[in-house]
Image (cartoon, rainbow, N blue to C red; front, side):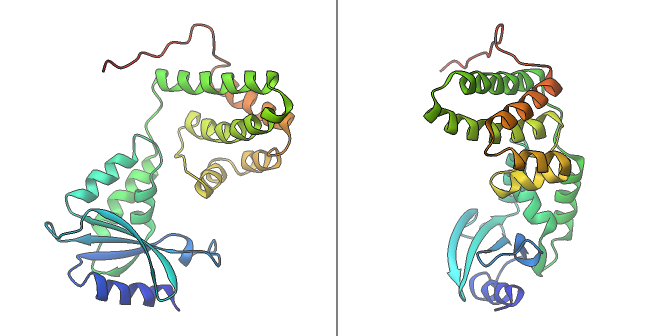
Length: 228
C-alpha cells in the first residue's frame, strides 16, 4: 500500500477536521526499510478533544506513529525540542510531505530553526560533558574485563554525542545519532563506526573530542545543586 494514499485515508477517517496533516520520517526516503512506519503530524482546531497526544496504532498494515497537536500545543512542543538539542519534532514538521491543508508557514519556521542550529554551549554545560567523558575513560582504564565491555559501549555512544555538542550541532537519538554525526563530519562518523568493538579506538576518539572541548576535566569540577 502506498504510504501517501494510506495517510490520506487515515486522515479522512480519523481527522476529518484537521487543519493540516504531514507524513514524515524515512518512509518516503532512500532510508526506508521493511520496518519503516508512518510518522504523521496532525494539526487540529483549538479545543478539539485529544490534542495534544502521541499515539501508536496499525492502519492498513502499516505501523503508525501519530503526533497530534493544536495551534497552542504545537509551538509549545517545538520549543521543548530545542534545549535538549534533539529537534525531532522540528525535523518531522520541516521535512514532512503535506497530505491535507497547507502547513507551509509552520514548515518554514521549523526549517529555519533547524538551519540556524543549536545555541552555543554555556561553559557549565561544556564542563559537564568534559567531566562525564573523563570519568568514563577512567572507568574504562580500571574496570574488570566484564565491566569494560559495558563501559566501552557507553563511552562510544557518549563520545559521538559529545562531539556533536562541542561542534554546536544537533544531536539525535538512536539512528539519528549516526545521521547527525554523518551530517557533521562523514569521515569522523566512519571512524566512530569502525571503533565500536575496539576499546583502544574508542579511547582514542574520546581523547580527540576531549581535546576539542578543552581537555579532560576531573579535579576542580563543580556543579551547583538545586534546592528542593
